[in-house]
Length: 176
Image (cartoon, rainbow, N blue to C red; front, side, top):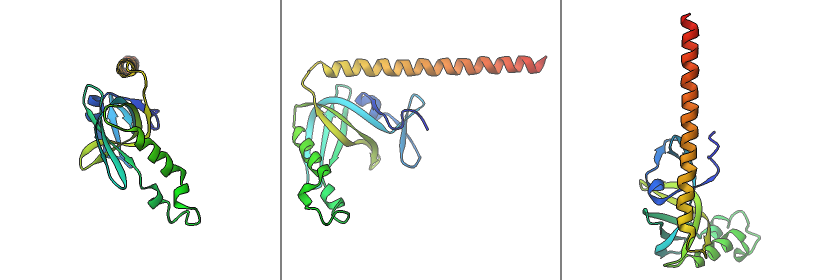
């Protein structure tokens, strides 16, 4: 299992929306040869659609718009497992409702969650939403993401070069 499997990887919208889908269970995606299943993005809310069971919104980071879904139907899902508890006392549902209040047009947010395919399009199934107060955080996130992937790519190249050198050494030894 790849070390990035359970990590929320910082991605730009353009990179997130261009991930290659892998046919695995659970579904995963590839970026620079690495498996990515969770993402973190920073951007401005440009669209918001609240329904009974979910909140759908778009986050724009300047490179694209990422569709996000925050599920609000936890009390429906937990109704059978916790029938003795009052429906209003579900902490997961309460957290989801609080997070949905933070999501409003024009706010700068940090969104983390699972990367999922819905009707053939990539979106984020939201785990948490954080309101960003520093307007420079979006630029810092973009620079940080570029640096992280540049480091990952150079490490991959070093491993590939080391592997190729080892193969050449083995071939030279075998030919002697």
